[in-house]
View 1 (cartoon, rainbow, N blue to C red):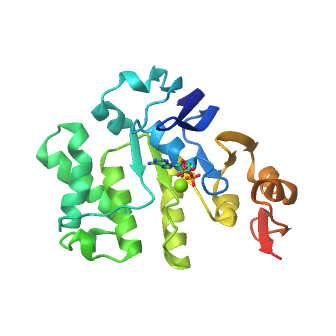
View 2: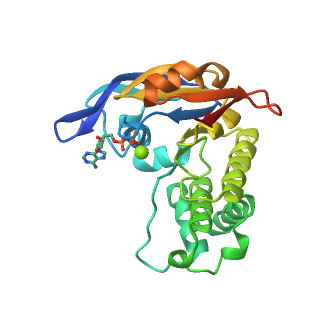
View 3: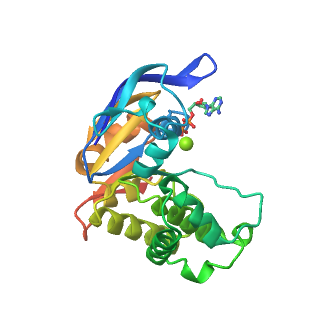
Length: 250
Ligand code: ADP
Ligand code: MG
């Protein structure tokens, strides 16, 4: 689905990702973790074409991303950035409709898809509300709806639950899981390691611009790996309900 081959990319002359490679199969649920500043957001920005790799390449279903137009990319990849801010008081429905830009479709179909995306994200009641007058959780759900309106095959999310309370955090992850069942490939950066453990089928650890660990949550959410990655000691037990690793702070 997505083949990231030896990419080096950064800002100005300062490389952030250094010869990073990662191969992602269709319909995966991939959690990306790693310390602040390790390059997780930079990786997502490069995958969706905002940044161009200085070296190496990214293949999307076998085609090099740099050869695709912005619209072609947007029909395959939806991106939910870490922080979204809107200067103009568009309604939520208008914001989600912007996700249809890449399709040049019929107005009727556009509204059908907008409706579908808003239903799935539980934002239909926000349709007429102004985007700049929402709570953090509502805003995040609308931004996800906009990405879904692109009808992407891959959804990239950058710490999607960072400002949300436990209830909305669960809601977002239940939604992502549902999207995976719809056949969408989910790639999400996570700061909450327990969420990574519970939801990801595969966890990738990025440190200093490189993939340093890649595997099942059972193998990656590990005392020694957490220590090496974050420099902290934690206790890890097996969640009695899911049998997956659960981190307890010391
Ligand atoms: P992460 O998401 O893992 O916290 P980022 O990819 O955001 O890390 O950042 C990696 C490094 O790149 C950091 O050192 C950060 O300061 C730097 N960086 C991020 N965005 C920019 C930017 N727009 N211009 C210059 N440097 C940046
Ligand atoms: Mg980041």
